[in-house]
Length: 107
Image (cartoon, rainbow, N blue to C red; front, side):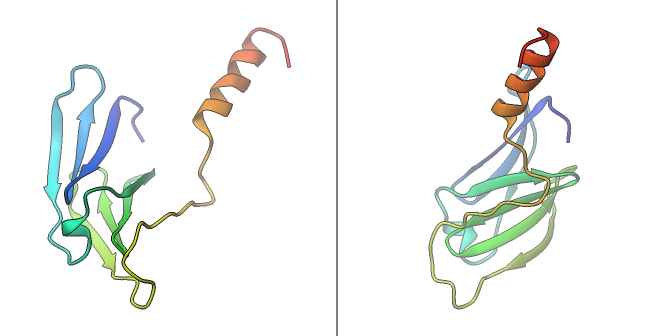
């Protein structure tokens, strides 16, 4: 994942935005039932994939261009916010604090 980008979701759209100047690199309007009407969703980047969970639907898109790889309506799970984590997830703030402490020679 390139740290020079933000990934945002609002009203059924996912977008990749440059942190430096706010330029939209790509934006995808998701037409999959459930997620297309979501006003908010959980977004997680993992390598070359972005996972979006909202309104009882989970969607995977390519980080490079926002194209849909797969979707899962999570049938039987209800129509609500989707919260998830993966084995590679890190707490950025804690990692930054630890790196800063190591650089300063403190623990």
